[in-house]
Length: 83
Length: 83
Length: 158
Length: 158
Image (cartoon, rainbow over all chains, first blue to last red):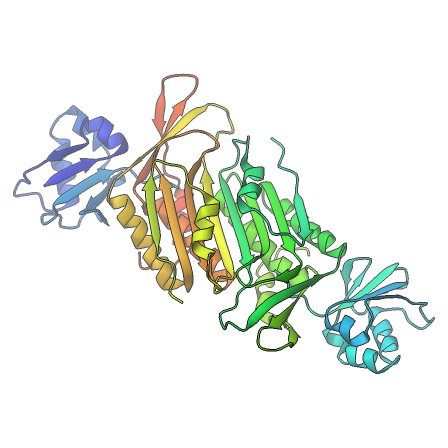
């Protein structure tokens, strides 16, 4: 699965994009955030408040409890500030 | 007093602008309309439904029962259709 | 920074939306939103030769200014422009232009919307339709929906 | 007459409001109203060097299209254009442009307003402020007022 990070999530993780093999236990966007959080200090800081973070699966907004196991691309980002 | 007519009021009265010496009994815009209506066929036709007609005194909208005796300029016109 | 001076123009000529937008934004850093309304002459049926716009010179400008002053009082605008044409206007041509600029979009949207609602019901302009098929011409009748639109702005003093 | 095809553009370049207006009105006689929203980079305090606009390529266009399709379903529009810039944008420069055209003004106003409310809360763009006084840069925080604006459109399915 391709995983993308934007804005301060990109800066904190130090990663714009990576390939991840989902562990068996990870089903939802929230599961994935909690799993990523354990990786290292940067990821821990990026996901320190997972409730704040928005998730897209295959370029569509999804809720944190939505199943993402079938997605080819998952993205994490802060609330949007365009316009 | 200068009296102006616009749109179909101008066409029906055959007059764009005229000077009128107000008769003593005429105090309001409605009084003036009823007085004008008696003048001839064209004015009678123009003011056949006085409740429909809008009035301005010195280039400001006024109600039909407002005193217009002090105005230098009074105008009669149909509901507006600009924009 | 002072707002750009209010511009009210009643003219037979067409207007330039880009130039009017520049007038409200150029050399300023306090404008976050510009909302522009352009009103055009329609002719879906293909029966219209032109609209003839008659106005009350003097009062047209004065009334537009009264409506604009009310908008400037109600919303924190950095600029406001109202242009209304008169004379013969062909299908597809411009009739009216309102631009409202502000730091934030809600004020600009509401002021522009308000301006158009009151302009429609209070500014002394009248439209006459000249038809292609005949020498006939007929005055456009006022729509009660326009009065309804104007009553949406309940707080208004005008 | 068919509506002008929907135009969604995410670009580093500035836009031309006059050209975009022409695209929605030229050679048509069914457009009575064009409402245009321009969003600009503000800097009232004089401390901003530039806004850096980051976006999610692919999803930005897709999400703008979803919002635009919802607007086209809700209002009888003759044309709709949404342009959003990314990259470095200086104070006074354009950020976003929405044009909605319709036979009648209410539809054009509401569609444009709706587009901006949902664009603000759903389109994947993020602003970073670069300051003049330091090398510091900070991410702009989302405003809850934007969420409130979006909830005004209760019927919305998105």
